[in-house]
Amino acid sequence: MCGIVGAISKNKNILPILITGLKNLEYRGYDSAGIAYLKNKKIKITKVAGKVTNLSSKLNKEDTSTVGIAHTRWATHGSANSINAHPHKVNHITIVHNGIIENFKELKEMLISLNYKFKSTTDTEVAAALLDFYYDKFKDINKTITEFMKNVKGSYAISMLIDNDLESIYVLKKESPLIIGTANNMNIIASDIRAILKYTNKYFILDDFEYAKISTDDITIYNKDQNIINKKLNIYQDKDDNTSKGNYKHYMLKEIMDQKDTILNTALPFIEKGIISILNMPDLTKYSKIDIVGCGTAYHAGLVAKYLFRELTNTKCDVYLASEYRYENNFLNKDVLTIFISQSGETADTIAALKLVKEKACPTLGIINVKNSTMTYLVDTCLYTKAGSEIAVASTKAYTAQVTLLALLVLSHGYRNKTISKSKTLQIIDEFNNINKLITPLLKQKERYIKIANSIYKEENIFYIGRGLDYAFSMEGALKLKEISYIHSEAYAAGELKHGTISLIKKNTPVLCSATNDKLNSKTISNLKEVIARGAKVYLITNNNYEDESFSIINIPKTSDFIKTILVIIPYQLIAYYTADLRGTDIDKPKNLAKSVTVE
Ligand code: M6R
Image 1 (cartoon, protein in one colour):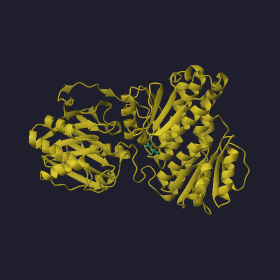
Image 2: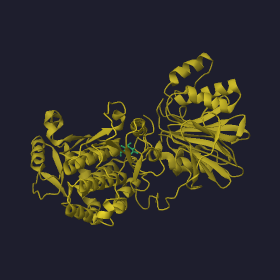
Image 3: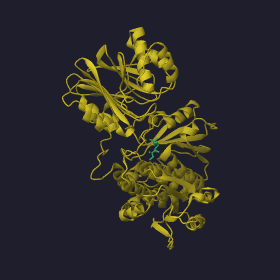
């Protein structure tokens, strides 16, 4: 979480560059923001609670500067106020920080015993004080940084200004991402590429336990032994990525609509030449089992793949939440392929789980959206979803792109292990080629979704139910609604409801259900009758022709299970969107959330 940007130039005013960079990083955290810059040979700090616009309006419009660092925060230690906002300055040292200093309590006690005083409740101020302590002790910045790295537990990307050397920015990194870009007349550092792309597409990636000194005309990168190292200069080349909101009211709505392109873009390399293309997918037949790991929406995409692997290709498959997986006994062996799913490629729990599998030298595959993100370098093989930049915190087009790649991976596996015939494979490839004809009508039913939104937006509890794959869709549908509308919404396996939760159903409780499996539908419909008998109002997404006036029905076309995984979620996404819109929430940046969860 949190976003860092910093810049140093001989003659450019870097203040607008830092503010623009922060705005581009706000999706990583937006509880509070702050900036430190050189003004009249001193560091001037401005910090605010709330969004980056609050910060830019507080800045003195006359000020200019050639060196500065800035931060947008997602609170971990201490509430989101201007005191806890970064930068933190302790004597000579001013820093902004992403990550969590795990041993900050012990360090703080030690520093208090040495007469350090703290204004905030953050771990970051402790890090600043520790750096100041070492700097005072060693009078040498290399020794200061390496000693800090030896003694600090946890994760950090830190950008630092030092009073005695205001012609440089220092950066150090462990586990949280940090890049250093080189632009015309300026060097610019950031926690991710989006902050710097307007100025440069050339950048160095700092690895764990590396640090750097950056001046106007030089970037020197060191390893933990204080040796200067040569790093590869990366060039970001995704020119097609459109990050504008266009005429849409919110990024989320635009991203939902983008799905008519992003799904096909993601699928194309694996479908355009029929069977030949599907064989571009990695061969999974050598593995005895597939494990899938992810968080939030990525985990839900994994649940969909689990059903497809098990039911359609007779392959053992389990799915795990990364935050649980990393602390469990995983029975790993070299015959098990572990698939890591992530939009950002930076989610801390998923990275930790991935590192764990790598330590055991077991095979890994990534399904990742953001190019050059941390996970893309760690996995053995990476399949990119082609969703483009997803700005809204609620994941929509990344989810359908993940599900698309996973469905095609399952299809190729089924073709290879002969559980799916050649003719069936060709039929499904054909469906993928025609995906836009199937999605577009679903995207266009705005009035329909608004009508449903109108009937549920004042509720405080909503249930989503389904069986099998429909249960997986329910989980994603419920997550979409709760994260942007703040309505409590829960997903249940339809058959599980009467084991407790049905006691919460009362007159007019909304129950949203998907029933798209011919084998299970009659059972799901019975469960719906049970909630209707208790007063629930029911909305049903189905590919069957039900005529029942006690349900409000949204029909989706009848397709294979592979395509169904993409279709069902679209009504759920749009119902969530219009419901949140009626409640007037900050849809693209819901409270308490951040796009990229880079802390445990
Ligand atoms: O970047 P990742 O895909 O690893 O992120 C995982 C979750 O944090 C993410 O899917 C989250 O649940 C979304 N906000 C859901 O819309």
